[in-house]
Image 1: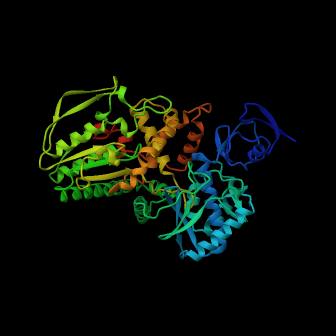
Image 2: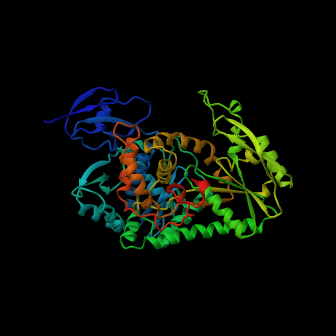
Image 3: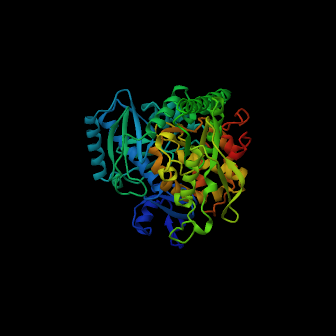
Length: 555
């Protein structure tokens, strides 16, 4: 029997029979750590633990309590739900929409699910978990992929994606309790690890609540009142209405030469919504004097703030921008993290007393001397610039702490409008494989870092976990305090980002730590047809990342 040589996480090489799986190896050579293994990495590529290996290589394991591990948990839990739902309610077709917090939202077609149905589905899911039912890894033909997809009404989208894949002679299907499904990413080797979940009836379908990275293995209570739910749902319904809610549909639009229309419509929608926000501020101008804009990295906050300012001026309102960055404490006074490094992301790194004093004075009609922060020397200084407000003026503040009440505690709530800005992508690969919003933001940031900050893709990917940790700590806990949610995602943008991001990702060598993420993103981008940026308007939020924006401050 042929053997293969594999280097395991302990740094040593071992010989195994060809066809051995990482699942078998993980049992014989358990990975260090207290959490179960969810997936594997083979020669830098994220793979199912069940995949038979046929070549020499280097092996690593993905713990379940990591971002990649929880994505595997989510796909597996979705598969478990679909199998149970098909057996309990075979007439119902499900479609994955988006995440709501740590939960996954699905809508039902050809009928609806009531609480009695969910109880029966939950019972079936629990039975499969208790039996530790395996999820098999099986090669199938293209014809079989099409046949499985036709049952759930996903054939058109699935076939469109299959056509984009190289080497179409064989595909991988996952099999659970006799049911087949096709996922773009690893699933668990069995459902026995899916102990923590709950099904919640919600609007047109069901929410599958699951643990998050920090809470695993425990569930975090899910709230149906989250404002972000409606923002996601609106994006999903709009993209479906214009027939561009999946990658296959976008690819077809590009092939048929109609992409310029999609660009115009998507941009027009954003302009209409921005104008609506400006109208709200204008009609309440005696009350709203301070507009606060916050959102995660690469959400397009700066371009949004500029476009909102333009619309305010159309209405006769003078926007006065204030940069939160200029109110940083002197570096010597900046709070520190437990490791002794400066914590520039916490709200206490801002001189809150001075910031609130200046806001109060401005709203009282007084003049202030604006500070300017010198990031090179870490000191705040004054260069003679002053500011005052007129009767038709509105202060516009953009920054990560905009929704945190500590930032503007001295200002009455009636005088503030808080806006949360994020890129909530409605685009999916098919009914059961979605594109993660965080992946789109990472692609945006990667392209911008390369274009304007001389950072390569490896550096952007390596820094991303720290960026995400800061968002989870300082931005997302306050998003429900927003008065308005604005979605900066553009349905055509993955096709445009592909042109810029692919060569950056391809340049990352297999020896880099970022290679695994790069491979995953490349696997996503290869499913999408490229689109030129020529027809994108110069005031588009996407221009903040590509270049060519009329808003120079956004770059």
